[in-house]
Length: 72
Image 1 (cartoon, rainbow, N blue to C red):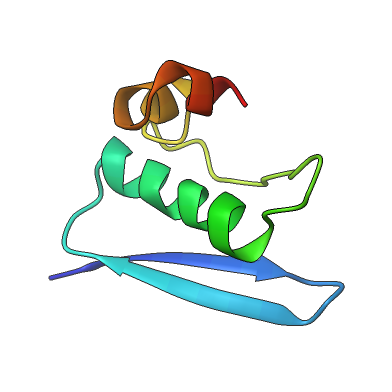
Image 2: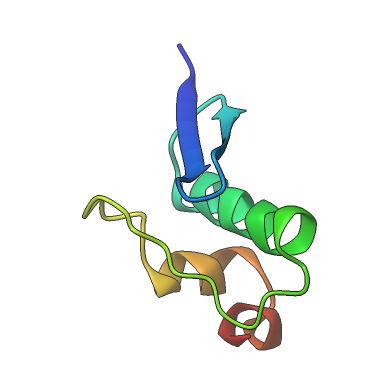
């Protein structure tokens, strides 16, 4: 069994999938961190549209990365 995090930017026609062995808040935070660090390092703002799963929250970012990085 595996977890898939699909990400897309419709206007650009770009999509990717991040695979993780499970679906935890740290796995979700790693996906968001990858979007920020790899795909959009120069973006001033990134808007995420997500389902209301309990792991998709700012608290998950604070649990996975240092507070200064999570708040940025």
